Amino acid sequence: MKAELLIDASGPDIRRRTSLHVPDAFFYIRDEKGVDTVFFDAREYEIQKIYLDKAGNGVQIERWEPYIAAATNRTGPGSVLEKSLLEILDQKGITHVSVSPDLSYSWVKVLESGGKTIDIYDFASERSIKTESEFAHMKEAQAVTDAAFAYAKDILSESTIEPDGLVWNGAPLTSEILKFEMESFYLKNNYNCPV
Image (cartoon, rainbow, N blue to C red; front, side, top):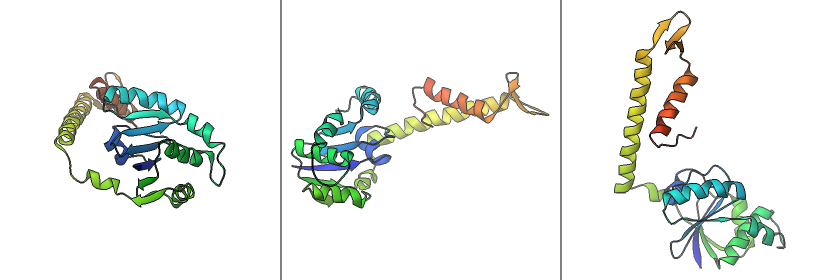
């Protein structure tokens, strides 16, 4: 079986495929049937499961600890994490993987040592043309951003210039307060604002 594989990739590739913002290590696999599965450790699993349940986009999520436990019995070179990826691929019957051109050589060697056939897939090329849905999300996000900056402008307009700096609502207006106000505005409008 052939699959597409992302390893510890953050940024637009994983967000486009899963809607996840992924700060920690993970494995992502799309099998021949188009099923997306993301593998996380126990802590990240619980956090990302909440996002995926809310997204309702059909992306599956698994914990990788069972694969790590099985990988400890594997012989050959590589860390337990590297061997756990081979264990996942073996248990899923995956013999051929398409990987990002950004995948490190050390991971390529791990895959080759596990007998996997490898080819390169340019995941970034998927983002070159926006869909109508993506345009709609971009317009919605821009509208909220415009409103947030209008709110910041209102705060600054309501502020007075005093000898010690700006004052808003009777207290000094600092960059941290303005940042907090903007982040609160995003959250009140149901937008996560990762900083």
